[in-house]
Length: 184
Image (cartoon, rainbow, N blue to C red):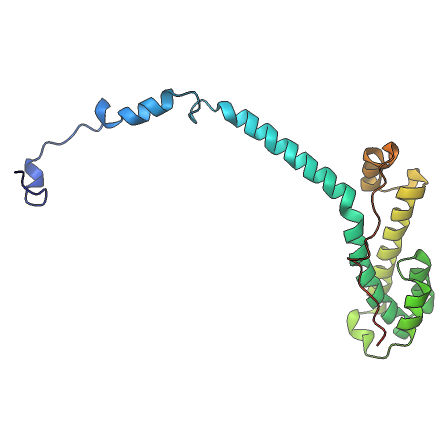
């Protein structure tokens, strides 16, 4: 019967050689296999798959980005319209409606709203800048679908060459995403 390892004096035990082949035999066998990480045969294939997936997701994102941006800008347009109509200028508010992001019915409902809308923006200049951004987005959305294509920004030209030129017209808005104008 052998004694416990705790009962033995560690100083009397032989010190194993750290470079002994029997200590690392399993690791050596693993590294000799072709699928081991040392050779990296699957690494190139994994990088290719990752690159292809990334490319597909980028193309899908470029194709489907308008409904999400439209919904975002529509929410901003509601606040911007309320601020501009009540505190600054009806001219910019009407320009927002003219872009089509807000319908005339939406504008009628928003005209009847009462409240403190001055908290939406720090200044009239900020509200007008936001209105300009929304108007520029709607202009770019219209140009991407109807032309003139020479006036598109860089991203618009890329999207035109990838999709519209070949007859794939990206969706512009989805009603399920768009904020509704409440009739309060």
